[in-house]
Image 1: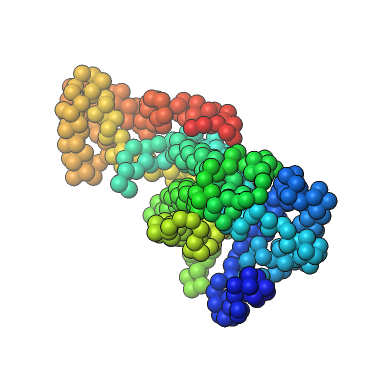
Image 2: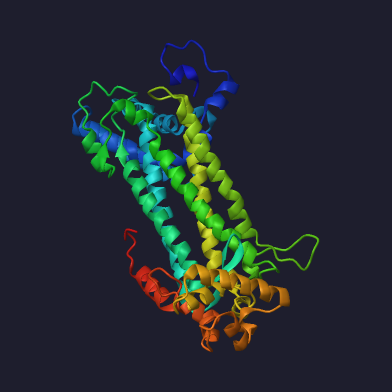
Length: 464
C-alpha cells in the first residue's frame, strides 16, 4: 500500500521506502489485530444501529470482520510492511472481501480513536490475566507457608541478623505485596475501561453516532467526556506501567532473597535441577538463573515507565505520532511481567526446597534474641532503656569471650541483674522468641495461623 492510495489526493508521491519502514508499526501493533476487529465490529454495528449504514451493510461488515479473525487465527492473514499499521491492514483486507463497502467502515471514526480503543481493549484483557497470575503466585506462597508455620528463619534488618521469624510469616509478607499489586491493577483497570471510540481525530464527528451503544457492546464502563482528552490520554498506560514496575519490585526483592538463600554462605534453600543451570567451566556450580533474570528484567519495565513519562511530558493536544511509541512499551512490559510471574511461581512451587535443619541451626548461632532479654527485664519493672543498655553490654562482653547468650550460666545472669532467673533460658530460646510475638500482624505462631486462615478466605476481589 503506497502513500498515494492510503492518503488523500493531497499527496502527489509515495513515501520514501526507508521512511515508510520507519513510519510503520505493523511489525508490533499486529498484536492488536483481534482487538481491532472487536472494536471495528462494534463500530459497524453502531453505524447500522444509527442508520448511518443499512442493517444489511452492517451485517456484511461484521461477517467479513469475523472472517478476517478466522484467517488470522489460522495463520492465513499476515500483513506486511506495506500495510503500515494494523488498522490499514484490516481495512485493506476488508475492501478485498466486500469491495467499496469496506471503505465505509471508517465513517465517523479516525485512527486516533481507533488505536485508543484497541489499546484499551488489549490492556483490559492483559490486566485481568496478570491479576489471575498474581493470585496463582499467592496461592503457591500460601501452600509453602502452611508447611512452614513453625520453621524458623533468621530475620534481618540492614542485612544483619535481627530477630528470628516464622518462615511462613516471611512468605506471607510477599502474599500481601501481591495483594496490593492485584488491587492496584484493579484500580488501573477502572481508568483503562473508558471508551474513546467516537472521539474522532480530535473534535468528534458530524455523524449522528451513539457512543454509549459502542461502549456497551465493548463492555466499557463509560465514555470519554472530552474528545481531545479521549484521543490523547495515555494516563492509563502510565498507570499500568507504574503498577507493573511495582510488581517487578516485589518479584525482584524475592529474587534477591532466593539468590542469597541459595548461596553457600546462607544455604537456606536448595535449588532443584528443573529451575537452575550450571557453569560452562565450573562443574560444581548450580546457578540461580531464574531469580537473577527476574531481577535483571525489572529494569526493562522501569525503563518503559520512564520512557512513557518522557514521551508524554511535552506533547500538545491532541494526537501526535509520538504516541505510536506507547505500544512497544506496553507490549514488552506485559510480556515481561507475565513471564516473570510464571517463572517465579514455578520456582517456588517446584524449583526450590527449604533446608529446615540448616534454618534451625541458623537461628541459634547469633544474638537475635537480645531484644528478648531486654523485654524480659522490662516485664520485671526495669525501664526498657536501662535494660537495653545492659543487654548491649552483655552482648559486647559475650562476643569478646566467644559466647552466645544461651551459653551464659545463671550465676552470670544474676550478676548482671538480680531480676534474672532460670526462666531466662526459655525466654531466649528461638522458638519462644518467635511464639511470644503474638501481637496482631506479628510472627507468633498463633498469629501466623490466623493470618494464613484470613489469606485463604479472601476472595479474588477482596480489598486489602
